[in-house]
Image (cartoon, rainbow, N blue to C red):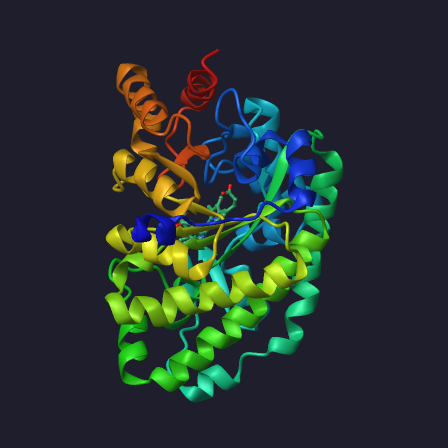
Length: 363
Ligand code: CP3
């Protein structure tokens, strides 16, 4: 009995959230309000699989030019809402806007992913400038303001940042990698330098998210795409602790703000992550079992989001239908948001996305 009572996680629902959830169905799971069908949005819902995105992207110049163009970034944020009527739009930007705003060189080579001038020493770190983040961030905040003004009242707007660990893997490695070896090595070999880097990213991320919320974001998601590459103690130090700090500082300013964490591939560390960071929602990756998703929601009293395989959205047909049904059945009655386990891939046929929305809404 004792353990039952101890394990019951209490979450107070702020009154501001209850009000806003009446208007925006995406927020209902956070307010524990009943929904007909679960709310749905998809990671990378604005992107190259949409012809209208490719058109705007072609006239914007580079990918970063698009991120810093409030008019065009707002347009591509809204495109998937117009086409599919998702319950939430996600700000069009990138997690690497934070290192770029800190003064690191960031480029996106066509078809190759991001390239950064890697940070390998205390001297490289000293070149980052926390004071100059303002100007670049201001353009993103303007995108949020414009987008909020243009979205239908019932559509929520999600702001986001990369988690400090994931952003650091790019800042130290200089590019994406399968094992994040450079960042992991720096964390082991130069923990003081690495810790300073994590602190710089965390501080900038709070500024970045604070501005997004002040400009009209209804909720935020913290993307920790590489959370799965760290063993327990390192996971606590570089994933959990900085995320907890970001959540705490944002909640101080916005107590009713729903915060979703996405510790991709964290596996059996996910419940610990939820408990220790204080996130309100957790996005589960494709490899997390749907039974595990339902159990996590009960055990931690947390909103769960996920976790359809993005490749099933490429496949479509009966395989897609079967899996959507399995997910909906597994999480029925829980506070749940339908999403993928990772981002939409460019070869996804838009018709399959339309079909998915229809399946989730059982239309
Ligand atoms: O989800 C959305 O629609 C909102 C916008 C968004 C983008 N990136 C746009 C984007 C979000 C939330 C992100 C997050 C992001 N960016 C993550 C975390 C999520 C994840 O996917 O794991 C990471 C690791 C990045 C870094 C990044 N940005 C990479 C590795 C790449 C190259 C990969 C690729 O698909 O080319 C990007 C570029 C990027 N970010 C694109 C988009 C639409 C494609 C660039 C283009 O249009 O040329």
